[in-house]
Amino acid sequence: MIGAIELGWQWRDPQWFLLLLCLPLLYWWRQRRASETALAAAALLRGPLAAAVSATPLPVSWRQRLAAVPALLELGALCLLVAALARPVQRLPLPPERLGRDVLLCFDRSSSMAAMDLVPGRTRFDVGLDVATAFTRSRPDDRLGFVEFARYADLRCPPTLDHDAMRELLGGMRMVEKDGPEDATGIGGAVAVAAEVLSRSSAKGKVVWLLTDGEENVATSATPDEIAPLHAAQLCAQLGIRVHAIVVGIGNQKPDGRFQPVDTTAVRQLATTTGGRFFTATDETALRAACAAIDALEVTAFAEPRVLVREWFALALGLGLVLAALGQLCGRTCLGVVP
Image (cartoon, rainbow, N blue to C red):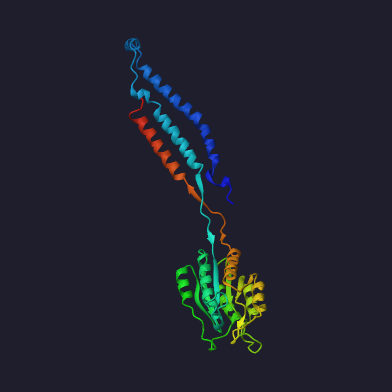
């Protein structure tokens, strides 16, 4: 926190104020000059004119009334010049700087997302898109993007602060054709793509939010070249990327309409290995609660408190020079004493 002592008006070099101890000496010197001038003027009155002048009281002129002004101006100038040497500064607190994160959503668009078990009459895909869109609105300081995946993963939007454009692209995503060449669930490959994108980021926080409804069925024992979820998790852990995973639905829907529970072990390991959280959501309420929990986990961080330092040296110096010039001008012209 910014301490109270660090804010407000301060003097960087207050030792210069010791020069103000010279003010009595300056005052004595000016008084001595004034006395010498008065004695010189009195010498002119010696002789026959002295008696006449002493018998008649002299009026006090405006010049006599203001005779001390040049001295006061010069003393004020000296004070301001000393103040300028002492370096007056004003420290003002700046608004806290938010440190946003880079967040990539990995969204499952396999055909199984067509099941309508979260909300009657609505697919998992549509409900997931609505919740994901709401999540993006709660992260105004983050750079957001998303990776869509089924069998293959594609970066559709890199992390950006243009959230409107990101949401427009997100709304244009579609499920793959059922039983088509892309209809599979490659969770490990999708997270690996997201990790590769985030590895180029300089953000303090890097987060992957995975939304899927199934098990990994691309990286299997028969396909050793594919990236398994655990391998993707290890990559994310090395890069300092957290993965929060949500598995939606009550299971895989069979042709006869029944649901078979899915094995979430790999997805759970994926999240916990990276320091993230794992959630299951069997309805829209649970899905929104999971997103709210992720939002709370990834709170917006702030930079160290900042202070704006304003220098007032030039103002004090300028005013001091102006007063000094005025004092000299007045002392040599209208307010000067001529012996």
